[in-house]
Amino acid sequence: MGASLAGVHAAEELRAAGFEGELTMLSAETEPPYDRPPLSKRFLAGHCGEEELSLRPVDSYAALGIKLHLGATATGLDLGRREVHTVDGTVHPFDGLVIATGSRPRWPAALPRLAGMHTLRTAADARRLADEFAGSPRVAVLGGGFIGAEVAATARGLGLDVTIVEAAPTLMSRALGPSFGDLLVRIHRDHGVDVRCGAAVVDVTGDIRVDGLMLADGTRVDADVVVVGVGNAPVTGWLASSGLELDDGVVCDETCATGVAGVVAAGDVARWRHPRLGVTRSEHHSNAVEQGMAAARTLLGQAAPYAPVGYVWSDQYEHKIHALGSWQPGAETRMIGPSLACFVREGQVVGAAGIDARREVMRLRKVIEQGEPCPVSTG
Image 1 (tube, rainbow, N blue to C red):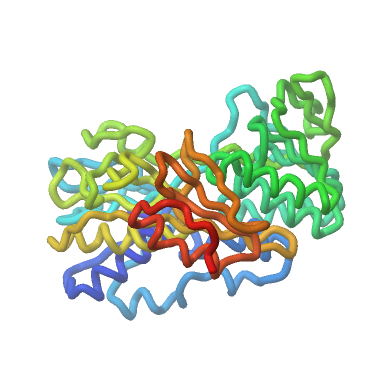
Image 2 (image 1 turned 120 degrees about the vertical axis):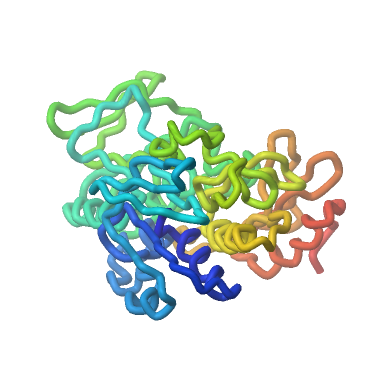
């Protein structure tokens, strides 16, 4: 269930592993599966077209014997009858089920929804935002995580007046820690972005359309367009009465299996027990690919612990940011180069990140996998 990146890779892995039975992929969206990373960068900037977003040629699904149903939003799961129910009233029976319904942007409860206020998750979101950017607005980005920082960089690259408002002390601190986040703050400020960290929005001004944000310190940020990027919530509402265990996602064991035989989960919606990290959930591109494949193998009786070293990248201005593993609360950031860092907890490396240093970051994969001490240098 879900024609997300995880869902597509799960379906393809089922075929590659020899499954020859009926294979159906249900998608809530009305367009064929597409890649999301370009939405906040090249697509939003107008540097790539619609055709470049497609994950696969549309006819490739039929070639693999995959029945792709678009606009098939799931409304319920009946585990007793082994059925998925969709919004059009159709009942889809199954023997095995991959839950890959992804996530949707969170919206702070205190914020109204005025014209000019956007989230960015889907291609349709990106099209609407690109149309807004064409009018040369003043842009405020609420949230300095990956999406917020990328949208800010894209908007600034288009010559727009941009302000980032982030509640944490620095940018992208949840994934990369405060010290490395400070490097990113400097990059954005060097490119002319007004970065406000440690700032909380207490009100949105405007009548029908937004015209500014009021911050807790009494200052105001003028804005014609506001992009809200404060994280995502897993899409599990359709599972509320299913009987599956839900806790910030579909709860799984270390093999992506739920507590129900023949039902697995993958991608943004899966909250699984990582052999090294404990219970976790990942919203990154590489995890969706790898976990979709792992879940498919579990469904076919080839279960193995899914224990990836998470990988994520981000393009901001002329820079490429690469990270393995993650910064964790209590971890120390140790710089082993001018723009290369290890995240160390209890003497072991749990993550690494670099700016324009992909090769150096990748060399640290085994160090993270084996929990080794932080190297003095990467050679």
